[in-house]
Amino acid sequence: MTVTFVQNRTDVAAEPGGLAHGALARSGCDVDIVIPVYNEQDTLVERVGRLYAYLASSFPFTWRITIADNASTDRTWANALELAAALPNVQAVHLEAKGRGRALSHVWSGSDATVVAYMDVDLSTDLQALLPLVAPLLSGHSDVAIGSRLTRSARVTRGPKRELISRAYNIIVRTTMRARFSDAQCGFKAMRTECARRLLPLVQDTGWFFDTELLLLAERAGLRIAEVPVDWVDDPDSRVDIVSTAVADLKGLARMGRAFSSGALPLRELRAQLGRAPLPVQAAPATLVRQVVRFGAVGVVSTLAYLLLFLVLRSPFGAQGANFLALALTAVGNTAANRRFTFGVRGSEGAARHQLEGLIVFAIGLVLTSGSLAIVHAVSTAPSRLVEVTALVAANLGATLVRFLLLRHWVFAARREH
Image 1 (cartoon, rainbow, N blue to C red):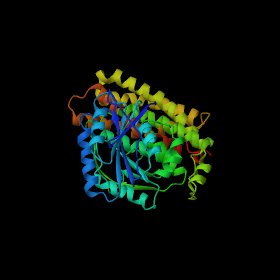
Image 2 (cartoon, rainbow, N blue to C red; image 1 turned 90 degrees about the vertical axis):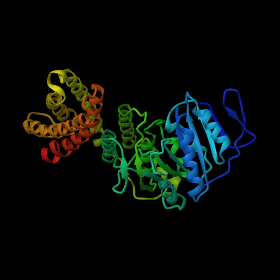
Image 3 (cartoon, helix red, strand yellow; image 1 turned 120 degrees about the horizontal axis):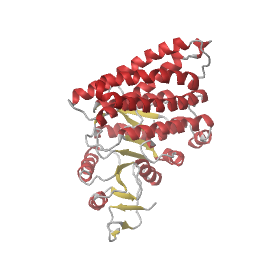
Image 4 (cartoon, rainbow, N blue to C red; image 1 turned 90 degrees about the horizontal axis):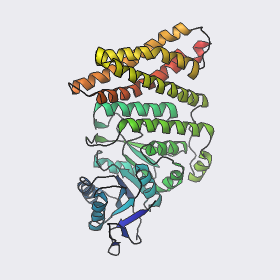
C-alpha cells in the first residue's frame, strides 16, 4: 500500500499528478485529530476550516489535524494538499486503499502525539465535546474516550431507522460481548497513543467494525474507557450502506466471540505490556457463543424466508397483512429449529408449550416490524419496496435480539427444562 504524507512545510515539493514527497519534520503535540475522508471534495475545505477555527480559538492544548484520504477518486486529495499547504498544524496522508479503520490504524500507529483522536468529516458531533473527550486522557485518568449518543444527557437528532439500528446493535454488543460501553460506533473517539500502538496490531477489521473491535480489545486489556455525552446531528447526506454495514458488524462480533472464547488473542500478555491490573473482564461463555452462532444461522434462513414471503404476499394482502402472514408462517419453523439446533432440546415433551411461548415472542417481533412499517408509511405516503424492506431488516435486527434473549432465558431456559 502506498502512503503519501504532506505537511505545511516549504521543503515539500509536489510532483506531477498531485502527489507529494519529502520527509516529515514532525514535532510532538498533545492531540492528533484524524479526519478520514473519501470523495468529500464538496465539503472538506469548509469542514476542516470550521474545525481549524475552533481549535485555534478555543482549544487549550497543542494540536494537529491529519486529513486521511481513503483512495478518493475526485478532488478530495487535491483539496487536502491545499489545506496542508495553507494552514499551520494541518497535514494530509493519502492511502491507495479504502477503509476508515485502515486510515485510522495507519495514522495513529505513526503519530507522535500524546493522544490520537478522530472525528467524521461531517462534524455531526458538536465540537464543544472535543475538550471533554481528550482531557481525561491527557490527565492520565483514562486510556480511551468515546462520544456516546445513547447516554441520558446526550442530545441526538437523527431518523428513526438509524436510531433503531444503532440501539439494537449496541444492545447486541453489550449482551453477547458483555461490553460496558454504551455506543460502539459514534464517530468521535480518542485514545492515548501508547495504548493505541499496543492494540492496533491485533485489530483485523479495516472498515466500520474497526471501532467496535478496538473498544472490545481495550476493555478486555483492562483499559479505562471514558464516555462523553454528545450533541449529535445526523448527516442527511451520509453514504453509509446501513444494511451491509450491519451485516459486516454482526460477522465481526461472531469473529470476536470466537477469538475471546478460544483464547486466540494474547490478552494476558497485552495487559502485562500495558501495566494494567484492573478487575478481569470475562469472555463470553463458549456455550453462549455456540448458541449465538447457531441462532444466527437459523435467523438468516428464517429472515430470507420471511422477506421472500413478504414480497410475494405484498400485492394481494398489503404491507401490514403480508408482514403478519410472513412472520406467522416462519415463526413456527423458527421456534422448532432453534429448539433442536440452537438450544439442544430433543423429544416431544414441552413442544406445545415451546410453540405457544414462541408465538408470544412472535407477537413481540410483529409489534416491532409493524411499527417500523407504520413509521415508513407515516413519513412517505407511497414508499418503495426497497424502503419497506430496508425498514423491516432494521426492525428485524432489534426483534432478533429480543427473540434470542427470550428464547434463551425464558422459552428454553435450562432450569425450566429440569
